[in-house]
Length: 159
Ligand SMILES: CC(C)(COP(=O)(O)OP(=O)(O)OC[C@H]1O[C@@H](n2cnc3c(N)ncnc32)[C@H](O)[C@@H]1OP(=O)(O)O)[C@@H](O)C(=O)NCCC(=O)NCCS
Image (cartoon, rainbow, N blue to C red):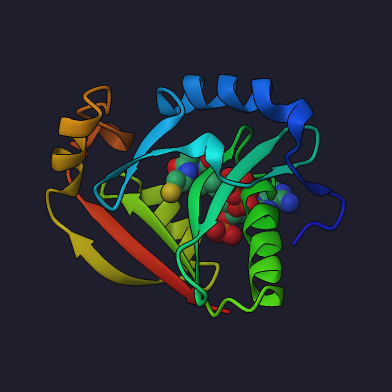
């Protein structure tokens, strides 16, 4: 992991920038996760480097911490890795035992990325994105590699 990339907790001064990023990259600050429409801006965030990456997370319960969003604005430079490893260390220090993340069937790059960083697939929810689209119609019909976005995959890493 790169040790020259600083990771900080997002603060008040980052709010506007975060909103802009969420609008540009996620179609707004509302995301559907586990069938629930969530306002991402309510959750704590980590920022890597000179605003080169952004991760939101939440505690699902005492044991489980969940990645809500993760985006590296320039990929393949270790930004995603430092964000995930920083969260893993913080979550472990806070007493959590597992890190969870949900991604979609088209996101083959993320599936590779997470599995290479100690996550294991633990659930497939067929049609979950089709259901999510009823809550958030802006979710695109197709995603990476032109694949239809239909299903959620859940991965977990023991801390
Ligand atoms: C998935 C995602 C977050 C990964 O972030 P990233 O910053 O590209 O990830 P990294 O650079 O840390 O690692 C990816 C690859 O980059 C390369 N890499 C890592 N560190 C590197 C470095 N210092 N220099 C050059 N390349 C490096 C590696 O080849 C690595 O591949 P590996 O999995 O075989 O190790 C990013 O692709 C992304 O933002 N995708 C779009 C949004 C998204 O899908 N988010 C996930 C939603 S669940």
